[in-house]
Length: 394
Image (cartoon, rainbow, N blue to C red; front, top):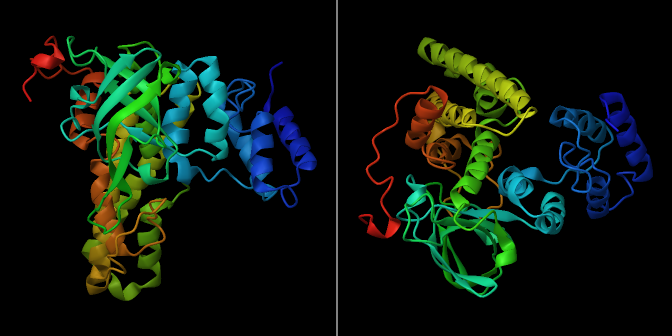
């Protein structure tokens, strides 16, 4: 039976009556919400959804927010919710969906992403981490880098090379890696901000059961495209209100501190305000397109714009504040759970925004994706396309 907005609103109200947010423990409330199909309504029944259009999620969220219901702290598990979950849903077995999706959504299990390597960042398909079959298991050895939140994660989505005798895109397999395995060594990477939200991860004889493989052996690159497309949408297509994000912070400072204003800064602020609003509306259009299917390469364009805007706006803020903008509160090495742009000072925002054009796919790579897959321009010459991975120059 299909469910429309009015019926879904009634279902949500009935759920709230049976599970009052004020008296129901947070973990119990979230678990019951998942079981009721009100977690992500476009997912199948039994997996946190009701098989209804994604657009109806806003109906549920509005009722829950009005009732003061707890959320699942989505920023704490952004990789799990935005990348691992849609990949598991699209490529996983029924057993994998049942095992991973609920604790992921509820927040009991945090996820990270083991994709990039020291020698395979922009050219991800050149990765060298090896997975060798050993009966019902795979033995994995290698090194990953720029792994956000690995120090807090229980599971990771991992791609590894299972066949070095075929071209690089064809010899990759996709796995779910248990980060509690004794062969997983997580080490902090200190950033320009002084924090270490990123990590490098060393994998030594990590044993992964074949039941934790997503998709067919050697089909990992195709599975990874689902992850990467969702990643770019998650980063560049976040839903924010008008004057949300960094542009709202700078506009507030401009209004409250007229002594900082100059004609040049005013012109630049207005231009960036317009650019931010265009990006926000484009993101809304992209989310509407997602209702009809899976994310495509358009997410690369959104992520490109997000990186450029964050860097230009944070740079403008530092200039607006003058000497005050150069202050920085604490260089102590910390390992945060979240990236807090709004809760820190201008100097932090300026430094942290530099990573926006690297994380989630470098801007240079995303420009190629937009050129080739969105605009239909001729692809760059690739001489290694048909060369076995083991024969590539490294």
